[in-house]
Length: 266
Length: 294
Image (spheres, rainbow over the protein chains, first blue to last red):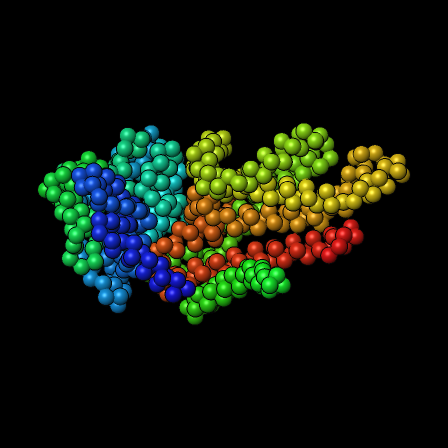
């Protein structure tokens, strides 16, 4: 088993070490930025190849530790346990903040609730608060939707809203932001949380502690559930990896960040 | 020279034939090796009968009863769909369909088996779940019922084609003897053919069950994923396969969570293994009963 993993890792490294081809993997929150940036980057730099995969922040960080990707996308900071593992494998993870994001809470457009406090959201997610009536909404059972625990969004949410309390067991679990958004869009009683970039016309964002999730409020750090989005590299970036990170942090890259619905650094 | 070549070929094919055995043993060894360490943290009893599954919480809880029950529920639901559909199709194909209908229907049923499971998943998510949500006025369409319907349709070709084989193994002489003593077609079917093919049909059903309980992608997409003990068919559930698929990517290698997922896989393997042994035993009896060799 271990040997196979090592063999795969070696294959992966062999595949990624060749000049001009990099692999990016991880957070589905960062995914739209990564994908768009990769497209534009490849168009600007013929001959360079950037392949992008989702999987979740945990998956991306595990991959970069195993050497199967060059850049790990993450919507949370790397954990102590992960750093320890990286150190054991002789890897030196470097964080690059590429954008800011607010974790937006979304409900069905027909829901009359326009805002909740963090305390109320915590109650909905951790106890058996059953009906929107209790929160000034319609007489409708609340369908709680959460992310699977591989998700950086889940961990950030759990830390910033739930105080790490357990999500009620009957919550619907989805593997991606898009999964949550599409369920909320067609489920009248649903509540879910997604990155700012996934708030579209088919769902309704609600305010948290009286502040709406928006670029302004996130950038000024007024929105209570704000977090940085990261890309991790192994050591100081070099070659194509450096070129890509520089591109993403530069004006053109930051414009993509904005277009995808996230908040640029400047 | 020729004899040498023959011997080489013989060894080659022997090796190929035993390769499956090697794979099976390898898989079983890995499953046990990676699964057993979890029982240092959790007792087997607490693992199997525990009612809460919080593998990443602090402290973590590893109770897989909700996952086991979810798998059994959706499989039972799938049987309700695939047994009438599959056995009914087999009976029709074998007893009533003319050669031309057979020529169309049989391949069609087999094509149903070749649709990739992710396509079934998409269908369930985008079409069936919203439909059932409206039809039954459910809070959410991703639930045990939706999963059962999709799994039932997926298992139908397995059941239909094996049941049809079983029917076709019934020797002609049985039927002729039945007609000779004056039985009509219905009597022949219910009193002679179905009892004779009965264990073959049971095998078909058991293999259909194996198919349903082991299915992963579809289940991950349509079951909803709530790790609670299901109380109604409209509850979202988290079957064992879905839990493994959703969580394997993030479980750090060697952690309790990682071993717990392997332990779930081991239990799933033991369940399908038992199904397959049962199917094999029953079909062996069936062949003996019909006087077929082996």
